[in-house]
Structure formats: C-alpha cells, structure tokens
Amino acid sequence: MYDYLRRFLIVMAVALSIGILFVSATVSFAESNANYEERNYIWPTVGVVTDTFGTRNGKHYGIDIAAPRGTTVVSVSDGIVTKSYNSSSYGNVIFIGHTDGYETVYAHLHKRFVEEGAVVKQGEEIGIVGNTGRSSGDHLHFEIHEGNWTMSKKYAVDPMQLLEGSDKQVASVSNSIYDEATIESGQTLYIKVKEGDSLWSIAKVHDVTIEQIQKWNNLSSDKIKIDQKLKIVPKGKYVVQSGDTLWKIAEQSGTTVSNIKRMNGLKGDNIQVGVLLTVDN
Image 1 (spheres, rainbow, N blue to C red):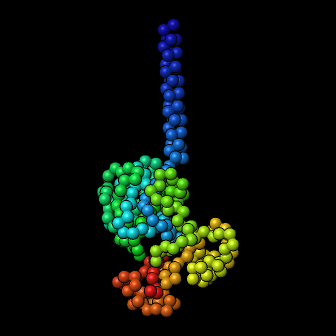
Image 2: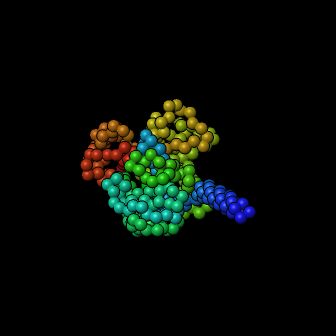
Image 3: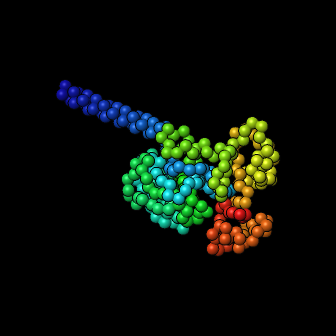
C-alpha cells in the first residue's frame, strides 16, 4: 500500500511539473508574440526623409532624415548602447540593442551623449544631428537590424515598416516623403503621384526632364501609378552614379571640377555613389 501511494505521488508530481513547464512556455511564447506585435518605435529625430531604404543600387541600408545641425536625436525604444564611437564612414555613430532583439544605428551625429554600456529609455536624447563621416549635409542616417548589426548589413530591415503608424512618434515625418512641397536646397525630394499626374507634368513643375526622372527612379517607360513614390533631384543638383568621376560630372553639367569641389567643400577627387552634389549655383 505504501509503495503504491509513493508511486502515485511521484507520477502526480511529474505530471504537475510538465503542466507547469507547458503553461510557462505557452505564456512566454504568447508574451514574445505580443511584444513583437506591439513593437512601437518612435521617430529618432524631427526632419524630412530625403532617402529611403534600398536605394543606391540596393546599398542604402537605412533612411536619411535631413534636419538642421543640433536637432535632437533620441533612442527609438528602450535598450543598451552597444557601441558609441567615431567612424570614417558613419562619423559619430551610436548602436543600441533593444529588448526585442533588434539593433538600431544612428549615424553622422555632430555629438554623442551616451557611451557604450549605457541603459537608455525610449525618447531619451542620445545625440544631435550633424554632418560627420561620409556625409554631404546635415542629416541622420538611421538603420534597424533584425538581430545584431553586421559589416555586411545582411539583417537590415526597412525602418519605415517599423516607424510608420507609431502613436508615440517624436516627429510627424513619415508622410513628409510624399509631400509635394518645397524642401531645403540640396535635399532630394520624394513625391507621391496624384490622379492626373504624368511624367511630363511632374517634370515641368520641378524644372527637370522626363529622362532624369526615369533615371533617378529606374523607370523603363513613362507609365506611372497613383500613389507611386518618385525621387526628384532639384535643379542644380546631381546624384553620383556608379562609374562617375568629377571630370565626367563637370562635363555633363557644364561646369568645372574646381567649381564642383568649391560648391561641395571637397578636398580630393573621391566621391561616393549616392551622394547629392551641387553642380550649379
């Protein structure tokens, strides 16, 4: 009788333990899914989105937000600063690992206010907008990576997919890339095609050619759709393409290499693909 009771109690204890583990795992899984679904990143700064994810032949792994130098940059979510240093490409840059497993990158800062290991809260100021590293104007280059950042940026995701629709966003800039409005000289403009628009009418409004719009947006024809995003480079500006040289750009823009260097503050002949250059005053 005693052995029977002992075996019964052991079986019940094992069953109870398995049940607890199952419930715990189920709750943990549900919480994980809930956290994923409820991810709510705020905007890192106030400004105008001037370049989006996947441009520059697929080599642009984040978004660019143009803003005056000194504009506050904040952490988009709670996390820990994994890196904070000055890079030849990113300039003053901060990396933050978040509680959901994602990592965000804030580049070209004028100043950094947090160091590696710092615990930051969503909305906490971590730096200010600048023009350091490989940058052609004051702006924040912002990236989001699913997991840790890697040199190849293989885990980069489009920040607009996680920033859009945030009810806590710092700045209402998610729709600014669609606004057909005047933007500071030197910035790339993104517009949204409206009913009745054609490449001819858009080219006329912005004083550019149809061929230029097609080139900037990799269009093989003159057909466009309502709500389609189109990149427009203001007159007097030029986006550096693969294979370009300062001599080639100067020749086709009707200016000189020395003038381009002067207008853009260039000291050498090296130029980066995707950089917006001033080619005419």
